[in-house]
Image 1 (cartoon, rainbow, N blue to C red):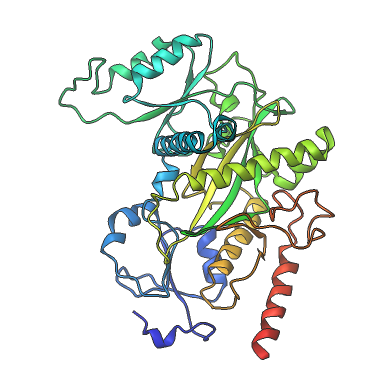
Image 2 (image 1 turned 90 degrees about the vertical axis):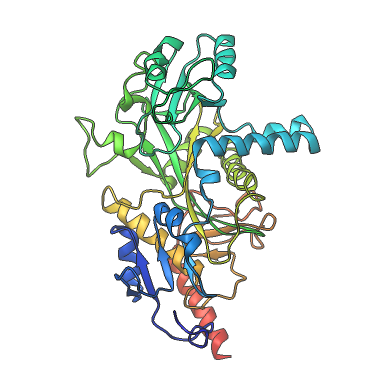
Length: 425
């Protein structure tokens, strides 16, 4: 590894990186002039690793002071569907004990959720209390819509249950353990645009859990269904699942147009339809989802100064403009579906690396870096200047600008000029 004398803050050096992915992130790392290490045993300063590497290698890896890695050790506490639900339920109970039911109600942003097979009996009781409801089954550790299906009758999951190695009486046979699922009450009144369902992908960067330090990216996108919404066809994945991996297999999918709206387009559409007050309430609700979900794992997350995490949040809006948390991704897709998608992800990842600051150029006091706004730093971060870049007189003081104008190039140039002047003085 490099000697500590070579990695002082601000010192010019070649940064060595490893990357397990060959998509947008690899392009960004190379574009910064960093040196790629391809040997398995090669020394590195920065590693963009997959979660498999974290599981198999991290605990056996010595890391020097300057080294940085893109996952926390137990990131799955927030990104495994069953653990996310468990941690959010625990937070809600804690808030109810400490502050009462009214305050705890602010955590009601995720659907009623049970883990199967462990919670099967409890789920059946809830199912029978609302027999006409639609439910959705999701494998706890799969992504891109794999293994997901909707149902309305218990008999619809009997075939799935028969193939598993668990039984109603709790006994098991000698077969391999069953793949765990979560079953959630399906949000059957989504907000529709052009008669189609959509959800929103937002990007949240955590650079520390203790203290909690959170950055929110201004840009993101709405992922649209390719087919008009209807509850008459719950078996049609093109209607109900907005994942790009699902939608791009539709017969009439156009890869150039895609099924995405930019977040600024979506915000402007909602402003025109519902006015600024309703839209601000919606986006403040999304801010609450980001912070409360992270707080739900703050005490159990293994904080490590070498680690950071870029989360992909999937948010659904219902017809009352209430935001719902669907899931959180530790490895949000960095493969671009078209040129516009590539540009968004390239800039996003470039700004992530600027915040991680391997080159030692930042002061540590920044509230804005490129397209990222610092929203939480051991407490809420507030705007000092209400006429800040990218928004004309916002009616709130929290330092978040989700879906607002992302003049990141201007911000980065201004920031670098300021830091250059500081270094000269």
